[in-house]
Length: 185
Image (cartoon, rainbow, N blue to C red; front, side):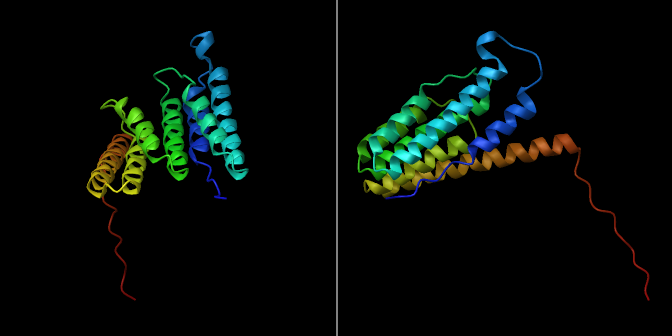
């Protein structure tokens, strides 16, 4: 049986919510911080259930757990929620591919990729294209796989550029270190 890796996403998502999402002001009852945290916790539990199902050899049950995650909704402004859903789509496609449901895996990944907008630039959208490349490799379409990997690389470069720009804005214009003149002994 194949060992299932848990995504590091959950720590990142939880930290984002705790650092940026808990302002103490309630938005609306249905989109409260408490409800958002509960949804993230449910997602984490569905991922663990999927991992255990895979260990027990129940791939279809694991895929059903990913489907439950995909159905969870978050406020559109909550980026970590969208990313949790994208992560579940990618994991579902990988489970399908590893279970020899390769055409179904391609349909799964293409469905989520088709829903992306130009503003959806993140590690997770890049990962969707990476997974698409893996699937295309598996079905013997190397040129299409290369294109998918290239798209993943391009998205990751945009993510890095945006982060550099944010850092530059936060810290001001980068400055050179002052020269340290040492006295000769």
